[in-house]
Length: 178
Ligand code: GDP
Ligand code: MG
Image (cartoon, rainbow, N blue to C red; front, side, top):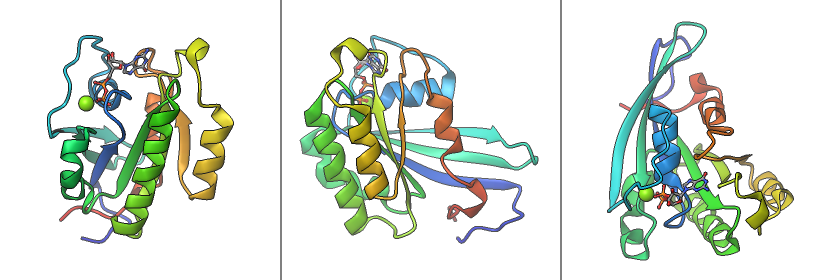
């Protein structure tokens, strides 16, 4: 473990957290395959995918992505998924204030129990549903700023900002998997 500045093949564990239904699995599908499946199934427990991306300096980054279920009954398992994660993407649905509250719960949980150098991003998904918006963009910005997180609003449906996830931080500085 421990990042090596000149490593050519980096491995980074990324975990997605957030309420059930906010679009975590759709974000992953969009990120990894460039697809959106409106009939996608509810995640049970957690699922694992990986995505390797090439950076301009011929470094590759292999994201090992843990997509968690979000249901209450799996909450006790969450530490298994975020343990050792370099990046946590905490997702809420901009049409649902409850999911924004739940996102804040996850931020606190990671601040208490996640690795101290974890990079966190707060993601307001379903940005295509502007007419149903109930969480102002500024609320997301303010919360993220206060907690030292990246912030973006995405749409897995339209692909808006999904590629921003690849730019979450300077990959060279992220803790590597063993
Ligand atoms: P998860 O439980 O967080 O993994 O949520 P899913 O990825 O299973 O998505 C839950 C529901 O939200 C599904 O019906 C998706 O089609 C829908 N959904 C996901 N992302 C978006 C989005 O960006 N825009 C819209 N309009 N619907 C979305
Ligand atoms: Mg899911």
